[in-house]
Image (cartoon, rainbow, N blue to C red):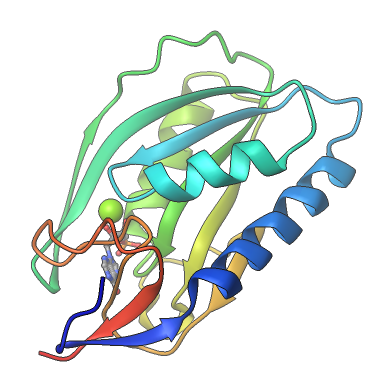
Length: 173
Ligand code: IMP
Ligand code: MG
């Protein structure tokens, strides 16, 4: 699928290679350890689906819902809806996001999971946009670091559209 207003930034092949490499790294780093992956909906769903299949470990997974974005501007308000019923007390959780932008969503989620008893919360994000950070938070794992551009595809949306692109593109507004 191509759109006149979406400029390809990462091809389907580049995305697949980066996610597969990341899965191998996580497999190495967590060999013999318990690992719970929690995806942040909706943006992470495609990345999560590919990443878990690239990890060769007996992981457990779930999703939570959180939103801090409307259109192209951050509202500054994070609406968190926990829907995980996994028992994760004393365990390591990896929060899986589509993109780390201001950092508000993940910092709130990380804090909540720690408060609820997680031993450790790591951050894995498909894309990292460090120039936009408002909170001091860094990903433990990321596939690509990008400039301050609004991107869509591979789960990422613009007003709920373009999530189903199998590549990542920049929206020309
Ligand atoms: P943060 O809390 O500001 O880090 O926001 C993270 C959320 O903002 C992501 O999960 C996305 O839903 C959204 N977001 C940030 N940048 C982009 C972008 O370039 N394209 C699409 N969504 C974005
Ligand atoms: Mg999102």
